[in-house]
Image (tube, rainbow, N blue to C red; front, top):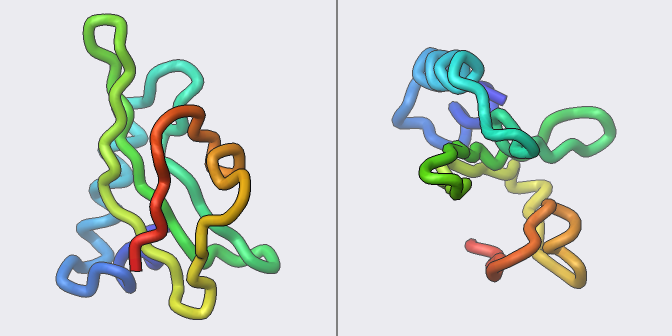
Length: 97
């Protein structure tokens, strides 16, 4: 995941991302939420990452979209039923290019 993020955000060295991921691992996530976000794989290799930071406050779960990157060869266009594919039940997902 750190390699993908370093390629997608070249202004930040890989060490920046490994440190950020270590901090996320140490803090955990609310029940039912992913600890890091989502990894997109193709043929068993990681090709994209959606880094999410979840927190619970006052009984409500909040999510911060920290960073995302998809290798150019695997650019993903959201299509039919994309909400179920990424586990989102409310809101609107838009493919940003």
